Image (tube, rainbow, N blue to C red; front, side, top):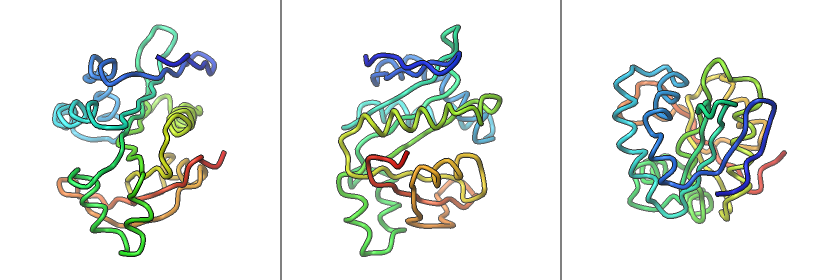
Length: 186
């Protein structure tokens, strides 16, 4: 495990897939609250997230409070053909961007902070430390296509539009697919 990094009363740690899987229910509780999804979606997402922990290039950073409670997390893995998100995004991108962005890319699958902890720099710290610890050429993600704190953070960190108003199966909200070259702009 990498050394922890402290920001005020929150510290950021690098976790293995096994460490993340051990606290998956807690993480999915944050996911549900941050995304304002119905409670049952946490259990559904936990199944996928559990599978993600075994994928090539899996990397995870978590934010813990002074009592070791999880208050935020971010994780992802190397995106490859045959993965659900990768294949959908490949079809959504303009043809000349697919290889340029999808080859040697890290898919930021999730980055969430409890709502009452948002706006304090925790998400930025998670993203910065996660991006700084991966060997990929680019980082890709999808986020609700609206003016949210998360969207503004991604813009500020150098993410650009790859696709806008994209509808993923199972979610009626439009999403933006964003990408950034690594290292991130800080």
